[in-house]
Length: 334
Image 1 (cartoon, rainbow, N blue to C red):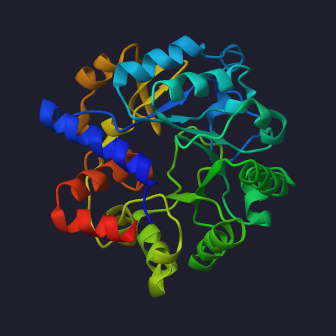
Image 2 (image 1 turned 60 degrees about the horizontal axis):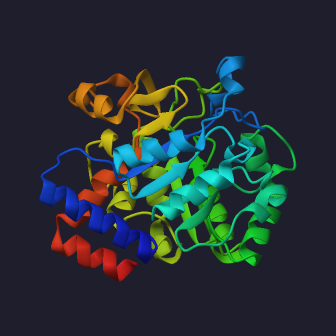
């Protein structure tokens, strides 16, 4: 299972246009952080460590739209922080949908029941609920009891209201192949979410807890066993087959950090949202002034254990588009 057909068509059309224009660096998905404030204090995230005056700021609707238009991405991920704490988040979604963008709103879902009425189901919109495991493991990851139950209830409410619901699960060295299978079976079979996104935890430098992140070999071993016996074909995973091959160690790819850039209240982040080496004001500056060749495994030691979706899924998508065999495989698996 890969991307929804309408999203796959949007991205496919976008890639063809970039090839015709002979652009060698372009955005597939843009991550917009319209705020850093959050209602949780997760150990694997450092966003709320921003200064108090920054945590109080909210990005205006017009600024969000301008950033998306500037980079030209067909898909937008609204993240944070907790986007539902932004008073105009519904207006941001509406503005992006009116421009024919595919929008995912990333949320811990605690505030979703309170704000669900402000949104309307749309084939180009999905909630992306963060769930890092079943109840005990997820509540430990977000450092608060009861959040798992709240998130599950919110997912059911959104599904009943006709919305698409995706999930995003990050796995750490405290996980095992069994715990990976348990959470994906639950999301797929019991909650019946529309798509599931997975990622090995990366040692994000501002994260309060640093000892739980996976190394490359740990990641490969865990996913190789978790995906055994054809399991991954059963789950509605929101990934290309080649990215899943990469997680298992069947394929080796280089990172493509420019394909999923991050824009926040601080500007365009260099070189990616996991490594804050600096910020620039415009997307053009990001592309033209970032020393892209300096990043990736074997080039920068901070990249050596990264297998994150934001860097390697774009590489896998480009490899799929460049191969008739892999394109056919994608169609069959989708």
